[in-house]
Length: 418
Image 1 (cartoon, rainbow, N blue to C red):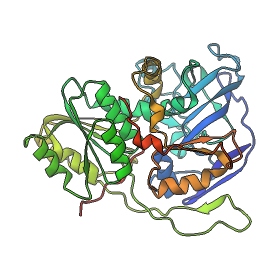
Image 2 (spheres, rainbow, N blue to C red):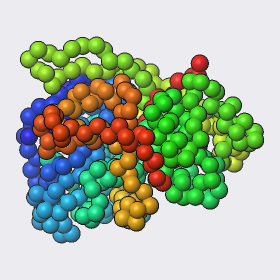
Image 3 (cartoon, rainbow, N blue to C red):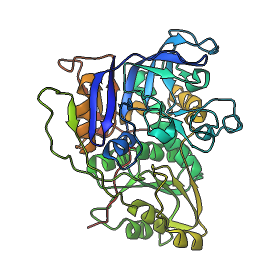
Image 4 (cartoon, helix red, strand yellow):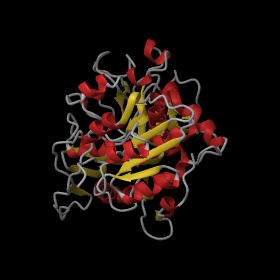
């Protein structure tokens, strides 16, 4: 089968790999019908998040059809259509039973203190092969697969695998309530869903801070008040627009993500699917500093942007002296997906409107490059592993999604304003 395989920093390849097989009684094999490219994938490929093992299949977002089931998966049937939560959880430990699926004691083979297990990540997360493939093995499938109702499309469901739950988790951790004023730093896919979720939770005003016009335009269509940090100081602007008080809640949807240029290497003549894409570098902490500076006294800061374990910088003095409450962490996807499915069924939100590109698997390397360059209009990319032909009428570029109202991370980089 075809899969996107990590080989080294800046080196990923679309290549043939063995098909997965059942390895435990609680496993399932899923034929992937939709996957996606996430900003977190870029962290691994760039090397800003270390520990990736060569040979790992990338990707942690997936929708598909159940093809095989282990004997202890008793809540699903072959042929069921399912969404795959990005984080892996056993369902039995005390953390899973309390809803802290991202802190499962049983899923990560590195031990109870190893932290979150998820697909397509570095060695500290398992590693488990990812979902940018034609098929995938799903461990603890009785917990790690959520059956989809027929009225929820693949385009909607792929956003349920990671970024919609993460955005909602971020708004919930920010303690957004009725009438609150909220600032979201980073208007990539996760930031867009943080904006949408803040509105779902009753926010009175939402500010969206980014540097890319297409992302800010999408945020504005949601009703957010937009700030381009390359054109004005975001902290001064937030203070001025809130009467000098600052915002009640801040969501950091940026994290470690930093701008890196393409290294410029061309594909090997004999390997058209192979390119060296990115070079590692130092990641900024500017967004986190702005977040602490712009939140009001006794406000709440929610951090859902990805930071590696060795990230040590934080403006703790300012945060402490403002009596800020800080909540952060990896999303417990399995907890939120059933609730968000019900919201889609009730037509409170259509998550598919965030998709800007839908590409077949054989276009994946070019899609990674365009997404990394942050080309205009490339906000969220869906991959369709069962499609091979990228020519003709099936090619989908959802440019109109940016212009449509979006009813209600990928992270973007934050640099100092000019």
